[in-house]
Image 1 (cartoon, rainbow, N blue to C red):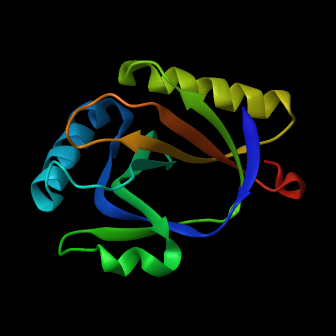
Image 2: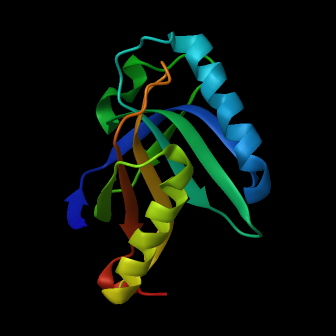
Length: 150
């Protein structure tokens, strides 16, 4: 696991809003819709940005990670652009199946807590492909500044 300061960036894609229990249905539907919009063989860095809201609800965006200033180049009608805040992010490589990605995020959260740091609630999963091929994923969680611990 590594900690790095990352610049402001953006995820351009399709939004998903719902309770945790419905994400297993809503997120794959959004990926399917994204594939229909951009094509199965699109050569992009596909990601899923997840922000935990209150009351067990999540705001997800499935799409493409870009530098903040280049997001408009790929936006299409129906897509949203969500800024990914700059700051300190804890990351780890995940080489296992997609079904165990949640466990990878749990390990990152536990590591942040072990380090005395507080996760912000934002998670970034980099490494999706629209052609269905399994790839290694880079998992990231944003950390609150050390002076702003919850």
